Length: 424
Image 1 (cartoon, rainbow, N blue to C red):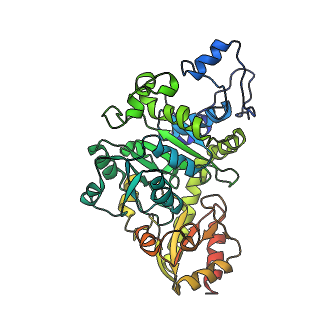
Image 2: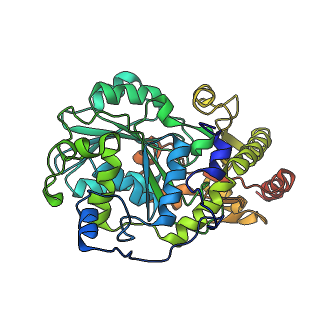
Image 3: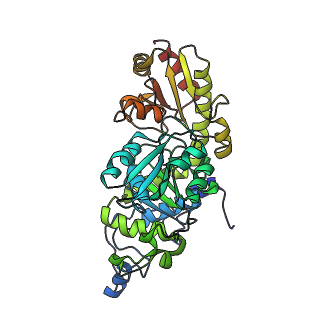
């Protein structure tokens, strides 16, 4: 068979054991690897040969999982990182230097907003944020001559804004820069950004990909489709003196971007994943398609229940026909979005707190998007570093509750919500 369907890829891609080898991806818990000659080792360090020589740059367990995720997203290569934040940083830092500029959606995870707005600014990389519902003209106005990438989330955390990927990609390409998209919430099961023009995809693998909240990690996936030879990315098209003058686009072709991310930034920053975490991530990936179907089904039932409840002031779930993002969700995620529902309880922040404290099954946790139902108040936690204006731009109101619907029986989830609302 030339190509499997995506739910089969979740199980079969990345690792193909030979005769007498382990059926399950083994944990190779080793920092180093031996070779028969110094010449063979030298060729690895000069990027003349493929292989493993230090787990910071590559490991057999991690390699199998990277290949699986690349196959799920339809990319030419992937690189696991120590966290989703590390993936976001490296994805941009790989092509942005001091003096460069980033265009980003304001409707992104609070930690990523702060990364771009504060930390990257301190590195000398400026940014302009655009509203989630911006017009093409407004997006166009955000670009500068030194813009080097556009960053957005396919489905934003926690405001659940659906990005018009095609429009963002067209504008990015018109200015000769790539679109980087965080696809954490929909996962490649529900959204395939490369098919709509995105060039680089990132994930916090700690969320649905893992699904069990047992490992921290991230991943960057390279589509291999962007043409880096337009003069704006000398780090990929000119000799790298730290590797004896190799030119990434010449030596690695379509995989130039992801190769540089690994051999340069991962080498120097050391934000690598661990073999143990990669093994746990793979277990989650094997059931990803099944779990996403249940998450989405449960979330839609919860959203419909909340929409009809007298104590709920508003509900945002892109799967609801009443959602302003329903049409975009149908275009980009026709089989479902994710298991996260955001809503407000009448009575504002105090009522939201009482509701959350009254839940019996759902847990109040910082995490989101795993198999257990959980809840959080973003304005006072994950987005508390933002001022009121930034919160408004990100779509995070003071009364917003982020409700991550798990894969428990939907009737039990709804009964828990109902008894908690009764106490508000």
